Length: 292
Ligand code: ADP
Ligand code: MG
Image (tube, rainbow, N blue to C red):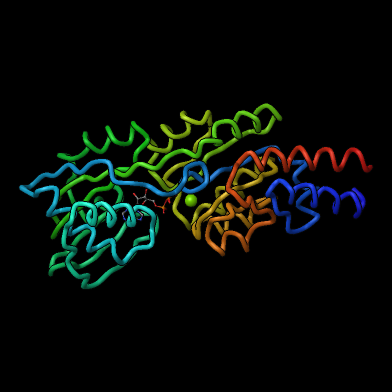
């Protein structure tokens, strides 16, 4: 495309809330064969809320929730906000946080009220030798419904499973269908557990799912697709996604997402509407053909 065509295309995109940072991205978008979507905050709103607490070992819901909320005060993960908000809504006193460690892709390891509190996925529990078999049915039920279950251990013993649910953005399913209609393959890439990921993928019509991918491995997942010949546009919102966004042939950030995700991307969807990806690809195909 001529520089003028690219300017016109970029200007037209901006009117649609699609900010294209460089002209190359508009040209590359034409060749995209595959769109990879982060789940939390990209396909979904990224504002989860607490849906259930199932306890074992004599814990009451409120006691475990207060402890977990105290521990999650140290975390910036969206699930942490959901737990803290739920504890506040129940009027629970949050015990003060002693020490805190985030375990990327797995959860948190904190000391609250002189007790060691672990909150996170099954892998976190396995790494600490916590037997969560009494909680797996409750966790599996939540995951099958597309919710994210987390396990809680206090002083090395299982205490609860808590689940949070995020809502799918209203336009996500339509965006996926439109991309598929353009002949583009759509993949989901997420750190969340596979059952949850598959349930959400089914809700929006995605057939290809890469789940339980650690933050440090998201970029390698994109490169793996590229090595198989896919030309990849990746859309994401999180700090976790930044490396994958820059590894992609076209990186697309959600406008309300983390600054590093926006900085790592070629394109920003101002309102977070994934149909903007469809418009960008369609526009790029038109821009390149009319101006050749
Ligand atoms: P994503 O944001 O893509 O779902 P992450 O890599 O951030 O993935 O997290 C993967 C999983 O680790 C989450 O689904 C959750 O089970 C667990 N996890 C991460 N952070 C926390 C936290 N602060 N509290 C509890 N669990 C967490
Ligand atoms: Mg995300």
